[in-house]
Length: 104
Image (tube, rainbow, N blue to C red; front, side, top):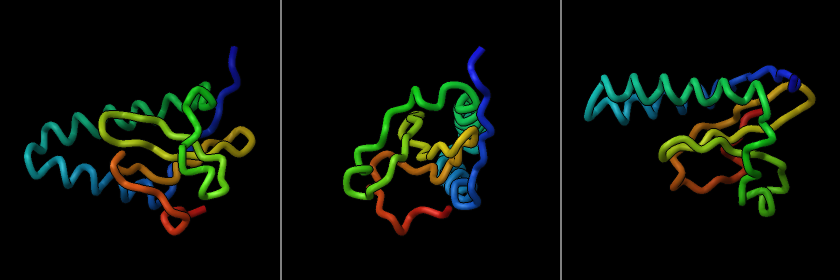
């Protein structure tokens, strides 16, 4: 059986999720609820096999080893430290990343 990781969502990532809900809810609060529920379910899957998610393309520029979990138009950017997965951001896939976007 694969090792289980602890998933920690940073305050910044929680704010990102709230912002996504607000944006989607402008058109449909019900769809926003469904989307966020499914997104959170996807994040929970990082407890098992977080390495299955690809490294982000920005690693070369940022000098990091972050990975991302893609869901719809959003991506959850995370890093693995030991047996803990830190979800750093949950942003729209069209956004570019820079180092100022991350909280440790």
